[in-house]
Length: 154
Length: 294
Length: 135
Image 1: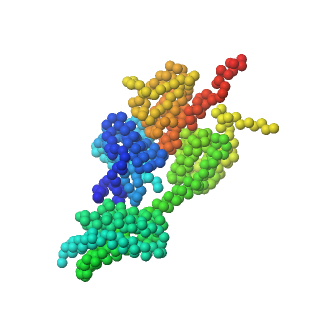
Image 2: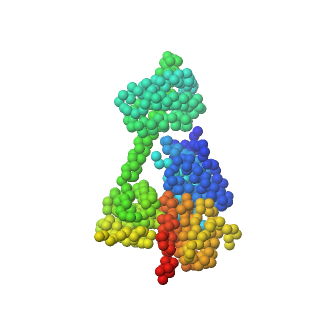
Image 3: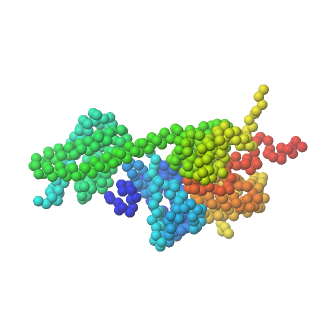
């Protein structure tokens, strides 16, 4: 099973199927209540991978920020949870996609304090600091996709 | 003579040999590795055997897949995983890189011997040998790469463990904690210090934390930022934070770099900081400590 | 403008209001809670507010902003706010996120928060009551 290069940030990352007992792979972000579902899904997912309490909190918080961004700026979206492995290391990958207006100036969006909606403007830059790998694909009018991974420390 | 025809025939021959003699191949491979292992400590025989069975089985499904020979090991998930795990196990158990490479070479030998059981014909054997080489050279490369990464991972883990023990949180006074920092403060260390310190604050209901930086050689912008992060986290918990051990040259650097530590309580020495901390804890919530001695 | 209640209980102890946030607070409820708390501060002439957050498993930038706004509004209405009991992982995550909770006073737990608001845990009746009895 080869992966198309655009879904695998590292060439030899393999994304496994959800382990037994894992949370739902997808959460649709259409209402404000869905933001709570995101937290629940991520809490379960971090437990499945075996993250410690600080890492659990990092991942759930990052997901909450990103989901809120997608909900407020992107007009809703979809969160996908995956369980990649990297040479025997386990990880958790979030992909949050919206079909909103996109981010015109990505560099500026990473600057703390930059905001165009509710919140503190720490969403993107802050979430990046909470994750090990962070990638944003966006273009004006083409929506925004954020892919963020945290690896389980061994 | 079409080489692809040749390759196809060779692939069939090799796959046939693996299918028919899987157990013998695994046995032979384990045996060859055991001979090599005289030089090395490492993996036990039962582990070798289990590993060999898994890898030989994966090799067969890989050969049966439609993948091109040079990509089977890379692209076939099961085989890729088997090779990766094989290499990681050696890295973790401290086997040498030589031993790890020799193990892959030994598999070539075991495979070729199995093919030899089916045919003695020179051309066919030659084609099979070429195919086995192409198939397993990728495994060799992948194995070596994984081995190196595995070793690096161990080094990272060990330095993290070293970090854990080198950042002790000590109780200096009733509700006063101290953390003596040594060497520099990078992101990883900051996380460890923060986690240990905050946990200790919560467990001991401390109201003041003193971070002593006497052992930190230089304070640049990054170190200052990490210090600020730690102080902020302590404050969020509801405790005060004092930084002590700022030597004159460090004070100079801080000013020259324009780093703003004005919101942080700082003291030159640990004892100054402790005096300040005791004053802070002398507030209403603390049980009065009796001073009268007779 | 809250069309529904936040469902967060607010208790009164003397001139201090005591309340706590739960994980399940969504954005609408958080806004409703802000309205309710500020109204109670005025109605009860509260001088202090203790917000216990020891049950909160995460604080994202929205909750952080709510806490800061509450503190500022309460101050405008003459009450001090103490946010008590932040969990260790939450504090670490907040600073990594880059959030500082400007102006928000914190306490390690509810007990210390109450002490900071002038309530002392002691066997004697607190404050004026003690003095009255000796008078």
